[in-house]
Image (cartoon, rainbow, N blue to C red; front, side):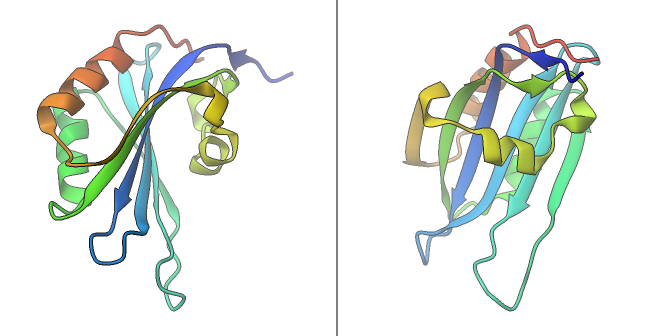
Amino acid sequence: MVYTVPDCLVLKIQEIESHTNKIDTVIYIIYNNLYNNFIIRGKRTDLNESCSFGSYSFECKYIDDVINFLDYTICSYNNVNEILYNYKNLPRNANDITFDFLDNNNDKSNEISGYNNINLCENNLNKTLGIIKNTQNYFN
């Protein structure tokens, strides 16, 4: 039997490539209260048929580390879409929350808020990540 978490905030960030207006990178961020860390799942989009990118998975303790990671991976010339979801079916085991799981299960009906084509702003990210951190998500 797979146990799931009934309500969990997940931030999805889509990097918009400035020259093509296509999504270049998709990143999901979750906070795991059991281990007191952020979970990052991401993938670059295949904008070019000659290159194929795999997904990646990281964890970090502090909001500043998440912001530093995003600052490094998202080009400062590109805008982003920021979407906050309430997932109702996340596996309790954080290792089972893959990029593909998140991407295949994000549902417009679970969207709480979304801001499209905006600059990645450290101050706003800090507030949003604080909201995610202070919601109760239990994984085991």
